[in-house]
Image (cartoon, rainbow, N blue to C red):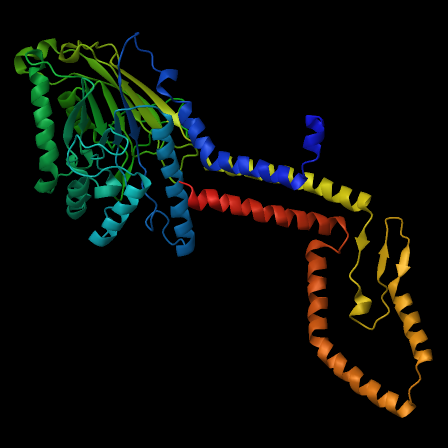
Amino acid sequence: MQSPARLLAAVPLAVVLTAMWVFVLYWGEHGVFAAAVRACRWETWEDWPAGATPVRIAVIADPQLVDENTYKGRPAPLLALTEYYVDKYMHRAWTALHAGLGSKDATVFLGDLFDGGREWDHDTWLAEYERFERVFPFATGDDVTRTGEYGELLLREVAGNHDIGIGDTVVVKALNTFRAYFGDPNRAVEIGNHTLVALDTASLMNTKLEAVYTPPRDFLQSLRESTVTAAETPVLPRILLTHIPLFRPANEACGPKREAGGSLPLSRGYQYQTAVDPDLTTEVLQAVAPVLVLSGDDHDACSYTHTFSPATSDSARTNTPIFSAPEYTVKSFSIAMGVQYPAFELLSLWNPAGENYVRDSSGAAATVQTKLCMLPSLFDIFRTYAKVLVFTAVVVYIASRRAVVLGGTRVRRPSVLYDDDDTDYDMGDASGSGSSIKASWTAATKSASRTTTPSPSTSASSSSTSGNSKRRSRQPWRRRLRLSQRVSARLCGAPGTVRREFSGRMLRLGGVVVTVYLYFLLLRR
């Protein structure tokens, strides 16, 4: 019985390299997403008492589907390829999130579902909405209790500035369309003895259109009233969901999870503003009195802790406590939004006391635990492919050189068979010995001419006629053959050389690898 080493040595190199590439491509196109999600499984980071049954939520920010507004002036074929790659990346991350994370109870989007939602006509909006549903497959409808194929709550109502505009430049038509398909962007949803408060801060900053700013202001007022009466009528801990980050002083560090480093930039421009106005931020914090704030828009991670006094009645104003609430700006879920490592946020909620929960004013709520989960970098994946390609080329080159040198075959195309020049056709072994085929062919021709002596006139005439005819008939394909030989020799080397052997093996292996890659890219989900 042969040893495993001998059996392995008997496997052709092409089979080994092909198997290696199948594994690497599967890892790069699917396995790397599953591994990233498995690293964030709930049991690896939750720290609740024994017997706790927390409610678990995944939070996604700024998928911002790529369109012509993302890369203005990019050629249509390149834009289509970009859209396909970005959509495929997010769909795979979304699928891995649900398949590998374990059970969860809700998924929340923090706005900027689209990039050009505020710019489109209705037909384009519907087409992009259907595309969004393909990238993030889920049930549709307006009911807050709706569940998708994963059996959980879906909340996509938070509106971003790329969806509807911002402040005085909110596009009413885009706002109404967003509300019709995704639901009211101002709403409160109770889950896990907490209240998720989705607030349309983009519309709240509007000062000109009553139809735009009235709904969020009325909603904020209702939250303020319940906060004021919280002493008599307790409320559940609130988690504020806003697309636009709340204001904070300039140059406040964002923490170590931010790729760009530094602080959240405070700026504004066409259809964007990086933070809610200062006075409005204070009003929101007092009215909502959140234990946690989650925001998006910036595309990079940022953490900051707000301090505030919750809204109270005039009689209780002298005894107003000071609360603090951390705000986590969640990284974009997309690879096209300027971050190398996209991410999503996980929330774990456990509040057994319900409305009787007593808030500690010293910090974040003890009922909420969070984790930022990084997704793979597309650049890292392609760098891995490049390293494996270099390794493959080295191995194939060594094998090609070994095959030529030890195999002893160096062959040049038999030009004597196709032309009348004096080039010999050598077929020799590695030591250089061999035979001259043209010499043999010439000797045989002279011998045949001596044994057959036709009449001079007939011979000359027939020879001239047949020779000219054959030469004319052979000339086109002979030229084409010589041209193809020269091109092949220039690109891949002459037959029997290491260069030709290496090129042939790489081309054959490359065809298989490309086929496998296209299968993973185009056919597998």
